[in-house]
Length: 428
Image (cartoon, rainbow, N blue to C red; front, side):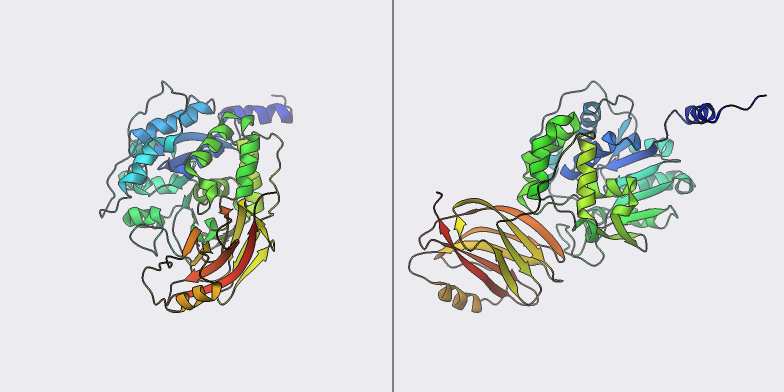
């Protein structure tokens, strides 16, 4: 037989593999805000072939509402061949569950309305994973109930999964679970399932809070997504989620999109002993937005906050404008310490001074920290250790015509740092 030309041989090989060299992926998700963005990213990626979506019933969303939301997101990207199935709503052990209000919001996709689809979920999540996970990368964005159950039901399945990339855990940083400040939500809900997957022998890369703390949803990323979201239906849906939930108002992170991106490009993070400990935020943001936009041109505005608070564990310093104009502005908070940082902005009434506020702060001992009646707080939040987050706030004129910026920690005792008192003028 005559030798086939190289290009023809390559084409036949690809055809024999399903006609695609894209990475086969199976997604296990609980359809939170960031899950929706992660799923849209994977569906849009030219490097990925999403083979199936399993919806966890133990995480944020309930089933079958979560399956319906997943099917609508899938249909939005033009895919009609991705099976979706629901998983159990009971953890393998324990009774941990997320607050009902959170789950109800997820059931309704946080108020975002998508075009309906006639597609329906089929079967159960465990059976779906048994059929589709062999040879695929499992992107685990939820408590691991579904995947652990599949490993239990089909001995040897773990050896046939290419790898698992899972968002979960908190190694050297505080957690975010409702009842356990040291635990991360996905592991907190079903720690037994997490242990089963960890001990299964499957190649596993964890993307814990240590890495996701490096990728907050910034004002500047949100501005770019808002400006260019018309490029694709996926980007439009992602922007709708960001806008509806206020993700860009500070305190939200691209938890699951980072894990999904790491499945595509492991070089986005620095991995130690199987866990991502830090992330390259600029490269991640570029990859995420480029993929959502389908390769359309875009630009993310440079980081130019109006004001900055920087905390190093012993001092809190203010940087930025020496005077502010009343109205919206961007505050950048950089926490370089190993302690959770609280920050606040506010105004004094006409009868008290900054010296009075400092004397009051010196009396605080612990517990709930309350401001005196003569101090009006305009904005306040917390920032995890080693994290930088942007916050849209509003500078108010107030009685004294100035805004006070302060930092606060509560462990092991209450300490307050007054970074600056900045004059605020009316808009020109």
